[in-house]
Length: 306
Ligand code: GUN
Image (tube, rainbow, N blue to C red; front, side, top):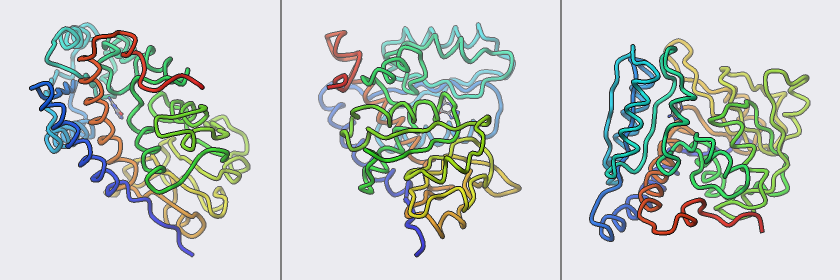
């Protein structure tokens, strides 16, 4: 029997409608809108599309967005200066520096300079540390979107074998870390997995992937995951967005996965829309955190391991 498609686009619409309601409540309570500032350096066409999508999504839910465009010749110091200015601007709740930056601008230095309370990507080492300790302030958008989608399809991770392919700071590492925790914002059923993190140096990758109840592909190699790598009945989550000719394809051979898996995310329309959606949630969260009085409340939104 063919697998069921995990409709990330549909789930995104549902979550955005919930976010819209929560944003309206925030506006009623505080008399101001949450504000997201996006810093876009250079002319990378894909980055321009991503940032435009984020701006449109903000508008849909009532979040105000600012676009700070900078020239492709901007130095690390130029971008740092803009980040500092946004850190100090009380109007701005969330700051996003779109990656990749041009070669001459050091992304690590820039991301480390973002105020951790405005770090809606959850890339700052302070926020990464809180995630690793199981008491996140913000959750990184793509892994958070994946967990939200699993939850809404009634798919649990507790006790399951999860294999994540790809060890990026944006997806692979935080995804593995989140699913291995004792608890999550969405309950212990969406944590407590036995996680294997595979990468380019993993030997005999298929031997590991084929044991996974949930397989998350996030390495950026078109159609890399084939039928033989998938356990019959597995849930397959494809994070890849690769341009092949004039088509976008994922890291998973979609047609093959549909013949063997129980659930598969499509590309496009799977994980991608959820990443943008969770950015909206994080911006609202940032706006709320900045209005809280007690600094201790601002370090985390769930209780550490019980
Ligand atoms: N470039 C690709 N993905 C992302 C992301 O999630 N956040 C930012 N800031 N840049 C990206």
